[in-house]
Length: 266
Length: 195
Image (cartoon, rainbow over all chains, first blue to last red; front, side):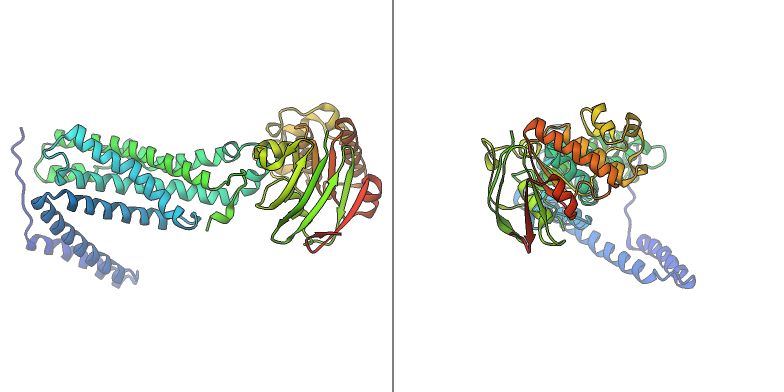
């Protein structure tokens, strides 16, 4: 076993990194890039958000209350659902728009995160927040992107190719056939990012979670195994989540008489 | 057989409209644009939400699966849409007789659709519908893009089809001469109502 140690950061270390950020801001000001304000606001936001998260996780780890864990996970799911919703240009009207993405994430990342902690990692107690919450965060962050891309593609393509879809309905095709090509394209679009990141993992990019584990003093080979598990779970979650989102959304685009209902899209 | 009966059909901008067409008959509908002719045809084919009763012989629209209904009661839009690059995949068969009756040949099927003229596309769209053997044809200006010669050929093809299959047609046309040639009945549409 590698005897690497964990180097804790103190405020001086953070200040040095922040100084480099100020340098970037000064550069933007000097070159009139006009992003220095946004850069500083974003930096301030991430400071507050991450320190707050650290504090909250600290409390949760200490208390290990199942109710508190459930509450945090629900909030994470809710925010991820909103984020997936807001990234779509042509989205379903009403609660269907928010609900479809959120339900798909509940079905995919939520279940997979809980199952993998309970079955693969088996900490004690099984809902140990140190494993459950970071894993859920990873799953949500990635499936959210896939689901948002898939739903966005489905909405936009259905809108712009409505003539083709209706032409097939007029000739007596079922909705599934009429929108089949578009549905497949949307699902493919949702899966491309995770396929790409699996392809380049370790060659071009060193995945964030593996980096973190190595910096924290973990053995690189152990870190690689963890990263692999995460990648597989994310790929499975993205496929399941995007598929369920595309199925629910494309069904909603037709009514009980198999009419194309674009009035249900924004 | 195709005996179409429409009772109190309505949706925003349309009706209530009632009409009936018997086997082999052609009801021509005319009226200024915006009078609801296309809405009427789309409503009969159940492409937009609407209320009212529509029956075809023994078939009751609400009790017939939507896809089956639209195969029997087929709407032909003024501008056909195509989902593949060539015409061939759009129909299970392209009878030589129909193609040559409209002055087309097999080569047309493998050319890129976007390179075809609007008249060629309209004639292909007519064949793509007829080979599915609908019992009622809802024709929305089916010859709008055709020259006089092709128009005559299309009218003859449709007329023959209606006789052979005892099918019915609801035909929207602005051309009084065409009405005189093809109609067995004529009605005018005005502000969503059939006069």
